[in-house]
Length: 615
Image (cartoon, rainbow, N blue to C red; front, side, top):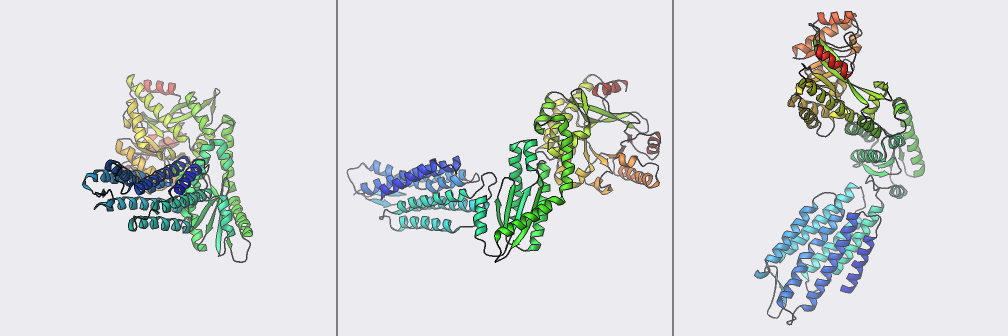
């Protein structure tokens, strides 16, 4: 039987090595597992032949049996490593190494096994340690196996249960009847079955997303016999994402969408990737629950979009399959429902496409991330400064940093690139560049002996959602040697209200010593309650309110905003002041600062430097 075992295991090793479906780690796990098992089979064969042979040195007998005992526990652990999705395998290897050490240390004390005067093998009092070590390895293998099939939603556990029974049977045979040398023949067969199971399993898996594949979807739909709902998903404008951001971002977008689908629908059905940008779910649940899950799916996409702005929108629709119907007709109905959902949102996407089209006039067909990186490296982005003046003294009290893009000696309108870069998810690169430039300029002007004033920098929601955002901006300010109070952070009212993550990062910046300004107050929710959500130092009233000064409702609103803000310990700066009567009214009701074309348009760095010298 040993010769048959070796041939069987060698065959598995060769199949694993040449398998194009399994990845490197999986192939390596099965190859090493088969080779270790071959070694165990050979050692078991030697122990059987030499048992009772008095011509063999006892040291050789101990060495052969010790190696046999030590290698046993590593077989299930190595197989588990081949399918592991976490770092628990390090603990598994460490445990088996400890068991092996116990086996070796116990040899002089006859702990694990010993030989009689006739060189006959006998189990020692610590034999249970070997059994426990092997059992822990088997449990770890089973844990990883069930984690794998649960994560990839493989509902067919019957084959795995058969494999488990064979493995447990082999262990019992080895423990109860040590004289019967068939245990590793059984385990060899288990390894073959295990390899076959996972080879077939991985053929059903979509490599990129980890979902079940299109072929699996076809097979599952052919087997449908009960009432289920088929839900189809289609990523909107996916080709545009690949063209604008590259295939790496496109792949990540698909993985994010797949993750959202699995997270929401996985508990209630089976999820598949059925095409390049298409997904499906065979849903088993009520219609009411399906509607709720649809809302949860959209909400999760919105949440993920905060950290990954390139995440596309997804259209989806469903149809119920009933007994007696053709499942292909149900799929057609679900497809029609999905396209109806897509059409309802077409107007929003048209506006977004127009946004990118305007930017394309300046960057051509190059990917957007490459365009912005190259533009920064070439120094095409310039930081301009719009002064802010004290309403009472009309002296310079600060400025706001604004970015301008000079391409081919022409200024690109901010509206043509800022919104598009924000939607594309690259605005954080531009934000960081502006902030770093302002810090360096402030430090240089201060070094030159000028009395600098705070220059606020707008940070987008995307910038504040970056990993370690607060630490990065602290590091930039420290690197320039500028006080945090000289570079206040501006965030919009919408970002402040909508995102818990933005609030967390903003609070961290305030704790570090940065002043926080609410920008564009009144352009969104216009709710005074939003001022209490964060530790704002200054409120900047949006131009859309300032434009209506002179109308009773607006005038009363401004009085109320200023009174509330100042009583709460905040200053108020009015943006977009373009008329003398606006400035006079704002001064009369106690507004702290004024900013707008009536006082100064945005100035290039050189002109703002001159203003500081005059000041």
